[in-house]
Length: 118
Image (cartoon, rainbow, N blue to C red; front, side, top):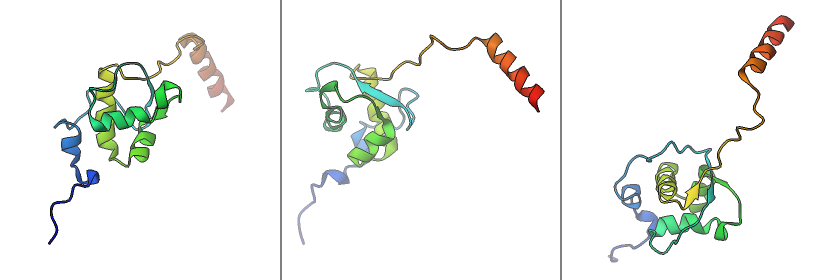
């Protein structure tokens, strides 16, 4: 019989997230995040793996689902890890553009026009 296995893939998701079972923010699989700034030396091993995917911040945005696939971790675990990294300022999500959005009056006028077509 062999000794205990030390395979990193055998770590339970509960342990990877420090006992947390829900993200602290509304982080969905389609949420795109980008690397912000901050030292990564104090982060846990899984959080450092997430940050390495961004390659120094110049890679652009990644969806949470893409991060989960790249790290081969359960999406629920990655959602928690990403929310923690957002809370610490290491990751951020681009804010939706408010400029250039049509006003409510214009949208209602378009809706009226569409209803007249049917």
